[in-house]
Length: 137
Ligand SMILES: CC(C)(COP(=O)(O)OP(=O)(O)OC[C@H]1O[C@@H](n2cnc3c(N)ncnc32)[C@H](O)[C@@H]1OP(=O)(O)O)[C@@H](O)C(=O)NCCC(=O)NCCS
Image (cartoon, rainbow, N blue to C red; front, side, top):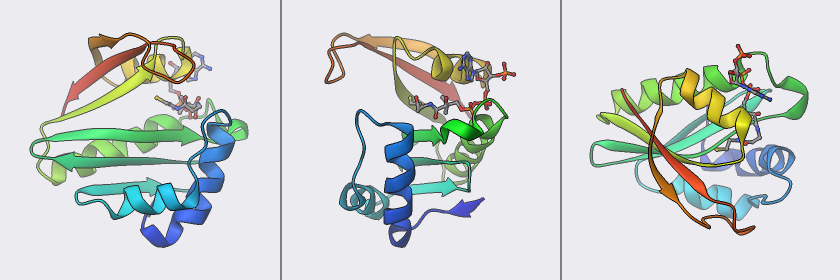
């Protein structure tokens, strides 16, 4: 897995657009998040994961696996890499928001040790709600 740097912004934005066609992040947005203090990420030819550590908690900002690479363990591997690096950086937990109707992601997180800690009604642009999930690391 390769460490994501601002110089990878174009490539990561192209991957993000394939994973999130309804809400793609452009290269500028990707560059900004990767330049934020505490931010870090990983990617390979299958997908990417980006997070940032603030105090003793890590937020999972985005995680995506290209459609043709799904259901072969890449999502889980990226998530584990992110959790390990978050721990190395001093975080004691990883938190994330996931759309209530995103069964694939919810299953992945549940299987990876995350539990539901909250609910955010009408959280997304399409007015769907989000679950807040957390895992101690
Ligand atoms: C969610 C996502 C990252 C999962 O990536 P992936 O590489 O397919 O996941 P994995 O192969 O590591 O799957 C791990 C587990 O997650 C669950 N899972 C993954 N895809 C699933 C699906 N389509 N339906 C039901 N469960 C699914 C399963 O429990 C799976 O374990 P199993 O294959 O042993 O049954 C991928 O579907 C994706 O990029 N989706 C679009 C972007 C997105 O929603 N990102 C998350 C935003 S919060």
